[in-house]
Length: 116
Image 1 (cartoon, rainbow, N blue to C red):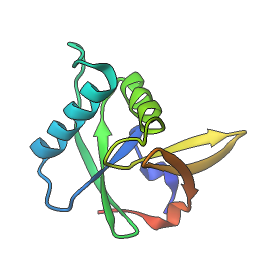
Image 2 (image 1 turned 60 degrees about the vertical axis):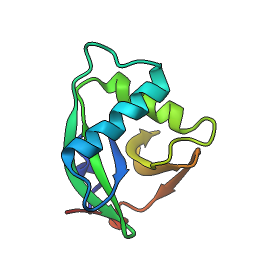
Image 3 (image 1 turned 180 degrees about the horizontal axis):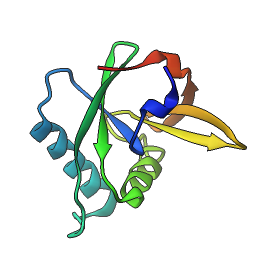
Image 4 (image 1 turned 180 degrees about the vertical axis):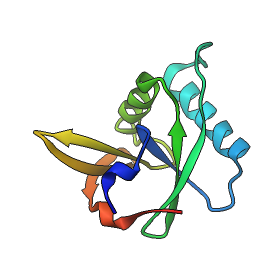
């Protein structure tokens, strides 16, 4: 599968049965852990579902790219979040897919990522 199937900045680990409301509550918690508060301007929703190696993820549908960047930076520090984050990025013109789990970033094959 092409990595360009990821429409938004990041995917956040989720459970198969997690509702949109539960996912959004988790994102609220992650934002609070990162910023210390919820910015008044922040608007987001639960996006498309994905599966990667038996683990479930959801797109964080948020127009503010700064929020995704802050979450990605926080995920790399102090053991990260309890949930993994997946993102796509171009380095030197080469597109890649990366997962941050427990503070550690690793690249993986986009073929492992499937839209549900």
